[in-house]
Structure formats: C-alpha cells, structure tokens
Amino acid sequence: MELQQLVRDGVRLRLVYEGEPQRWAVVLPGAMYTPDGALFWFARKALVARGLGVVEVWWDSAGVEAGRGGLAEAGERGSAAIVLAKSIGTAVLAELQVAIPAVWLTPLLGRDTVLSALQDPGPPALVVVGTNDFAAPADRVALVRGAELLELEGADHSLEVEDPFVSLELLRRTTEAIDAFAVQWLPR
Image (cartoon, rainbow, N blue to C red):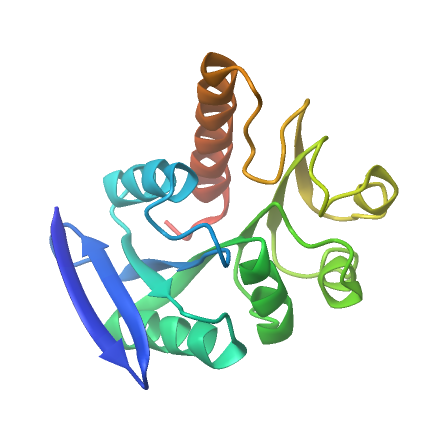
C-alpha cells in the first residue's frame, strides 16, 4: 500500500492507494475522529482492496474549503467516486452538495442542513447511527428518507458500546455495510 502526504491550498491530505487507481474515495473526518480512527481505517482497507484510492482530509478545523480541496484532489487523479463523512464531516458534506454516493457516519442530524440533505432525493446514501448517539436523536433519525439506514443498538457517537467485543462486532458490521454499499453504487 502506498502513502503520500501533501498540502493543497493549506489543507493537509493523505493519499492511500495501490497501483494507479482511477476512482477515489474522499474521507471527511470528525473534529475529534481523524482518518486513522478504526471506522475509517477498515473502510479504507476495504475500498483499497476494491481498487479505489483514498484521499483523506486532515483538518485542524473542519470547513467546506477543506472538503472541496479533497474532492478536487480526487478529481485531478481520476474521479471522486464516493465520500465517507463522520460527524462534523457530514455538515461539510451537506454544504458541498456532492452528486456522488456517500456514507454518512454519525451525521449531525440536529443540523437542519444535514437532515435536509438526507431527506431530499439525491445520490445514494448510507447512514450509520448509534441508538445512543447524542447527534442522532430517534425523532430526527425517523425523518431520514431515501437513504439506506444502519442503526447500531446502544452505540454512541463513536459507534462503540461499553463492551469492547461488542464494539468490534459493530465495527465489523459497519465495515461490511460500507463495502456492500460501495459495491452496489460504484461504477464498474
């Protein structure tokens, strides 16, 4: 696996790939959940195994311009094929209004822009929430329309529970859902 780090318009990016991929995933992380967190780590491994490269945005403060920079980098290297966003990254994703499949990990459903993005007909979406996530109250989750929804019983905003072995199972389920979503929606 190849790693390359660069700075684009003041935004730190890390590229992870094998060979010369033409399709790229873009990772928009959370404020306190970086691209090397377990959710992104295993998703990245699955996507690279499927021939995608991954552009990880490493921000000091999340912003639309940082997300736009990650998407631009993917576009210059081939095409941005899928976005994976978590927490504050979902707010950036909602603002960017990208027209490609997206995985919304622990979206900030209390923000109207995020909820609206998941109610309007748009590109394919996978939404992953924990039933104990402060950012995804059940009444707001019920308003999500047109997206595949994976609700993880008892999981918090990190998609974890107290028992580490149950947390590992939730991580496996989430990674499998991301992989299946990518297989279903990525151009062949």
